[in-house]
Image (cartoon, one colour):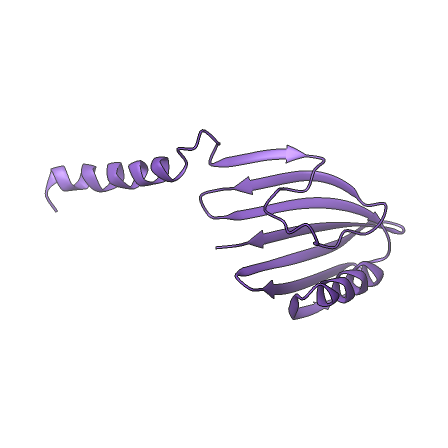
Length: 133
């Protein structure tokens, strides 16, 4: 490969990424306390859940948030499974233990996952990730 081409290919890739993110919003944004706007309004959130850290990755059309819920792992897994199906999502997989549970789901072009972890007696952390590309 010619030396000029070796430098032009990475430059072109950076230019394309920059153009994709040129709406003055950062390519990756971290936050806290609010569900990212990419999540559908009807996405189920347990009553009393505390929204923690959030991530918006505009380059990869991926968003996620973490929440803390007063529940056991199996109770949180049951809540999400029932509510997701009630709201028109399809559960692609759901499996776990008393301390760790994973759910994969889809609805239209949106696909996502929920990872539920026991973090204390009667308290779980749930990390929800979606990709709507």
